[in-house]
Length: 465
Ligand SMILES: Cc1ncc(COP(=O)(O)O)c(C=O)c1O
Image (cartoon, rainbow, N blue to C red; front, top):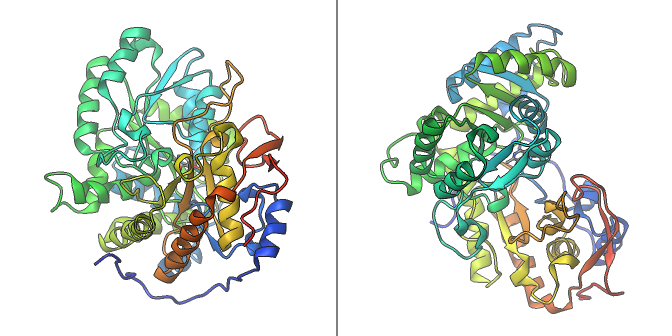
């Protein structure tokens, strides 16, 4: 079976509205060709992100009613702390309002000016916080991850020989830690294997390097390990998640993804000194260490969401296979995209979709805009705009991957929504030669993809009908 039926039924609905092509053309012009600047009510199917867009369960909505909004010592904090300890296995936990706040606190504590921070590909906010702390990110992901057609089953893996080279070149004292992400977002949601993580642990033990996990999509990664890696077919998702975390020294987590809530995050670790410092910092930037920027009810929903994400294996199977279903429809239509299909999204390969547009005219940005006009579906650029400028040269980084992300919110859209999306993109692919590039009219200095404004490089950037 290509498609896994939903392991839930729908109890509350939110109407969505289809608009005309002319309306959407005006809307994208007003949004300066940046899908982040569209109004959500002008979007029919919102595949901008899986971040904070999950549908919560009835048990999570019930948990919201149990919020203990005490400024200090909320019972929901202690429940969340126990849940993180039990499911992920770390000794200590500091709540934050979302993932980047945890990244900020961790980077300031672990990175010294002039340090190097290796990672299995960058993530936008993660790298920015590393740079703000004076660090330099070094990509140590396997080469296969940069090739959208390579079928490697674990394209998120670290190339240990690249780690060795970095140690030889700069010395271990200059390496803050390795930033290790599960289901690597910028590579197309590509998983890491347990074998790779075990080997990395051995390498890091030998050199005294910490492994800090980006735990944002570990549950999705556990599903790929269960499905693809020898020896894991009979292990539960819960067991695999715990094993992944056990090889790491701590984590940052954006709870807005796998943890099934609309806001939240945390920083976790096994080192007590780090915990004491993180608690001191969270008070400055987020709030007291027993709420860290979340309300009591947010923490209650988060603890319940974490438990649900690993309670049975049915949920995560349905979630990842729905993403795969979109990928298969696009494969049938011949639309170029990253393979193997990732867990949270299908990533269109804009370099192959629009080979006539130079990377400095932002083909992925232009493609996301035209997908919106064609279908009312909102996607997101993950390429040259997201990657930003090299702080040393000031030039666009022109990353190897120039992608458009079609991100599937959790428990939100049905098979019919996915069919509609794939059909619209297949139609646009037939008219791709009419799509034109873009140029900046406003370029923010940091994380420019969120608020940048563009205009077409030529007067009409439109497949008209
Ligand atoms: C892998 C990864 N790390 C970190 C973050 C940052 O988390 P947040 O958006 O909650 O600040 C994200 C968010 O998209 C992410 O995908």
